[in-house]
Length: 233
Image 1: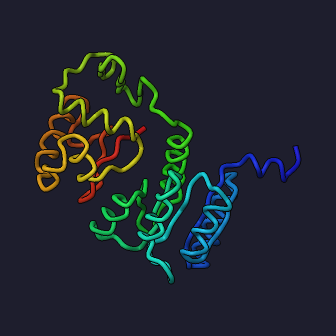
Image 2: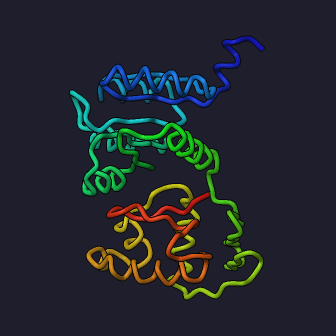
């Protein structure tokens, strides 16, 4: 197999960031992990590259010189479900929620660790390859059989309320992805509950008591402070 043929088979990553230093850093890191990289230095170039390069994952900065990153996400979501991971210095909860609600799959605040970035990319790639969720989800002793509506932890059956199960099923369907409070409330309870996040917190707390070995240090349902929750996979 030639080098060109090998490159064609590598996962394609599009980096959209106006900082040359960041692009060089990501190029060095991701190339060593056998990804095929393409770079864009502004929003319009990123949109054009997304259409032409057809990446498997997009790494997107929000503070672009021509278009706000949220606008880039909105435009991409008009025609593509490609996983988008936001990499931004903006660390306000409102920025994270806005990006995720617009359609981003994940959000990392700069500076970030290389190991965490690679883990988020791998999770995004797994989701994109899995068009529909597997009927049985399994991770760290937690098993959720979506067909039989059965949940077990370390082989023992767990009895959930219908609402707790609906939350867990939604997280399983999007395992590895951050879901905002608003997204979960809308899907599980409906739009009338969008301003009642305490309802979600109570149910997640109850759910953790049933599936976590130590609810105070959860390993399955991870809190993204002020934003939402993620199910580890």
